[in-house]
Length: 263
Image (tube, rainbow, N blue to C red; front, side, top):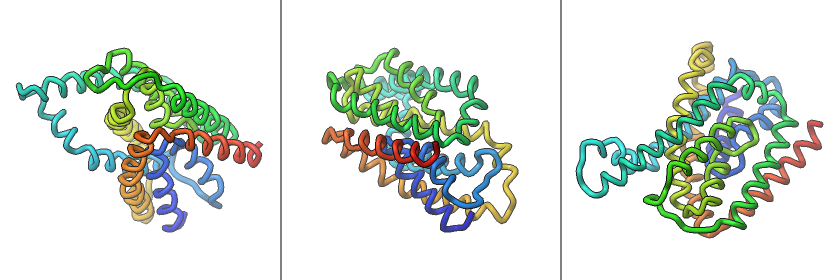
């Protein structure tokens, strides 16, 4: 892998992690097209995800400061933040259960590009229905434990490459009647413990990196962080304008082309 390849994959990760088109699916398909690409386990993928985790930390730093201090505060905003923190903990439980139970099985799917292509078609269909049939505009204060559990389960299943994490979690909340901005914010905040936990589970892969590989891997992670910040801002605008349908069409097209290439 060259420096150009690493940065290109980082840009791809940064854009597709937050835009609802499956970053893992795009990485699998792109890596199949890079001659001689290899990595210890999924070490490179994990570092790219850490780059996009950094984008969430930067973009939502005010929210995170509020969540970090809410337990010791007694102002009206702190009560809402404590409730949100509790829902994020609840939502992380099904993600952790699914991820830990099926981790090895999901990782084997990264070597099956035809399956990834099929899952992109599934993602497109989910986005289409979420964009067409969102039934309400519930705010953050109206989120429920059921919302959190279903969103966490969707996030856990999004470990399957080709299923968009942001797309599936936001779609579930939209179909539950949650407003677009609340759905996006909850989805992004819920990603933090999931991505951080996945990185911890993959430390053995990262420790196998040779010293000369670190600059390439860090360049990719840096590109993912910068592009991720732009992608978050873009997605929030798309959700306000109810334009998820365009991403559904994109997923269908990429999935169909990839199926034709790899079957």
